[in-house]
Image 1 (cartoon, protein in one colour):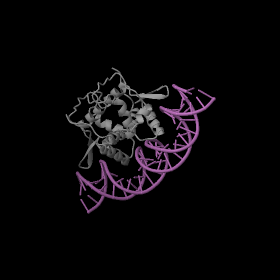
Image 2 (cartoon, chains in turn purple, blue, brown, yellow):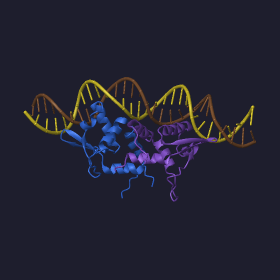
Image 3 (cartoon, helix red, strand yellow):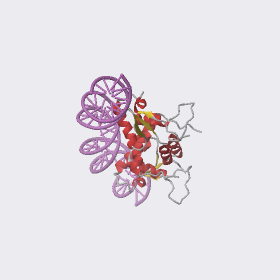
Length: 105
Length: 105
DNA sequence: TCGATAATTCGGCATAATTCGAAATATAGT
DNA sequence: ACTATATTTCGAATTATGCCGAATTATCGA
């Protein structure tokens, strides 16, 4: 069992990253890896490109880029270039860490 | 089983409330109902007065009040006057709701 | 009713966040 | 090398946040 504890400022940073509706929508889109009816694996992280993530969000590309950078800086979203595009995903461990912050036992 | 789902803006508001280190410290102080070594009940919410919560935080009373109001507005902290002081606590259901946002299954 | 204690509201200032457009960078295909 | 596509960086305008001190409200006890 890894230790998911992190320092106060860092925790606040994570929440700040999720405090903007656009960023939260982006994050949730990455987390909700399986569409209804499909089987969801907690081990395999599903990736989306920056462009895909921005669809339907009605924000400028520069704004989208900024938000994803914030999510990345907070350690919530991983990013990796693949050719012309940049893939984004949420590491399963990240979700566990977040959930553990509110675990009551 | 109640339905913990809430709307995007509302979720973002919750995270915004937790995005400030002072507010997060206040919230965690309320959540960490049991001090190390004691038995923690998830059913009984432990209450703290505003004054108690502010101790060791090194912020002006007006700032403390402002932060608690934000936590209350976000639905994270309950408040009730008792005589001269105001008691604050976190409802156990609130913690469950938060944890459910990151549940992977 | 008066004074002390607990907490809030208000006004204002400094700093930070959100957003965009324009320009820049990176890559792939021709 | 040129062009189109994907994304980022930069600069600037607008709005929101964090914080305090001073004044205000609420409550209790003498």
